[in-house]
Each structure stands twice: as C-alpha cells, then as structure tokens.
Image (cartoon, rainbow, N blue to C red; front, side, top):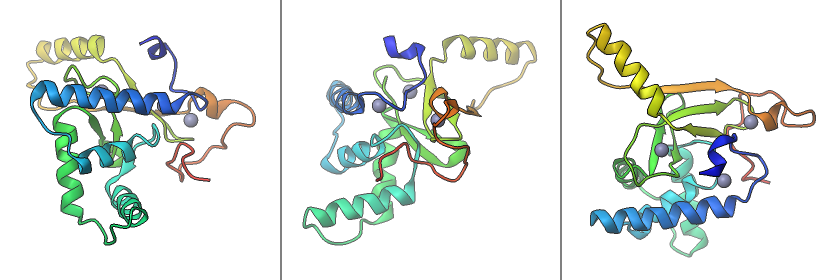
Length: 182
Ligand SMILES: [Zn+2]
Ligand SMILES: [Zn+2]
Ligand SMILES: [Zn+2]
C-alpha cells in the first residue's frame, strides 16, 4: 500500500507486482470457492505483463503464441478467452478500461470495488486510484439531483512522471505497451 502514493513507475520491480497479483488471485478464488483454472491463470498472467491495459485481440494473439511455444499448437478460440476474461472481471481480478476497450489487472481484488484510473498517454500505464472519497462525493451529488446512478466510469488521460521526464518516452498515443517488448 506504500506504493499507492506514487504513480506506477517505469522502473520498479514488476516481477513483484506479478507475484503479488497471482497469489492474491489464488487466495481470492479459494476463499470464494471458485477455480482459477490453468487458462484463467494464463490470461491473468498475460494481462499482468504490464500495467498498460491490453485488448482482447492482443490477448488472444499472445495466448496462441504462448501455447505454440508450449507445443500446444492451434489458435485459441476467442470465446474461450472472453469467458476467461468474464470470470476474471467478475472476481475483481481484472478491470475493463472502457475508453480503450482493454483490460488491466487489479492489485486489490480482495474487496470488490470499481476501478478509477489515471491513464498515461505516453506509456499506456493505467494507475488505479482508491475510489472511496470519489465514490462518496459522486453518490452524494447524484443523490442531491435525484439521479439514479447505473454505472460510473472514471478514466483520466494524461502523462505520467516518467513520460514527462527529459529523455522519457516521447509524446505518443500510438503505443500501448509499458515496455514488455524489445
Ligand atoms: Zn508492476
Ligand atoms: Zn481494482
Ligand atoms: Zn507514462
């Protein structure tokens, strides 16, 4: 939780993020009596390759390539991946980023919540904000206006500290990876 004060950095021990996310997923699933099947775990791991949201098609590609590398040839059927995504979203292990139609892992799946995100237009990193105060504020304003909330999506676009640094990634809206490719 100490990291919550800082924007998800370009240089950090990401293996640690992945290990934490996977062990949180195991705990959450066993507590709820749901099953993190091999495929679900594989999809979750691919989503956690970076903090930049990944689209469904890219996931299908990566999963197909990973399977090929494991000697299990054949492209993964899209519905298979969508079902795994549905499960991961339902369990709060993954959030959908609506503005990008993409998915990002949640580091706090123990307590179901909405995701509020600051999304960097440079590196694609989506930093999840703790939504408590925002939630309360929005709900109070809506209540004052007698407005029945159905869905709240808060996705804020901008530039992260790493991308604003001289020598950091140049401004761009084209790439969406946080450095997982060479
Ligand atoms: Zn990380
Ligand atoms: Zn979350
Ligand atoms: Zn950035």
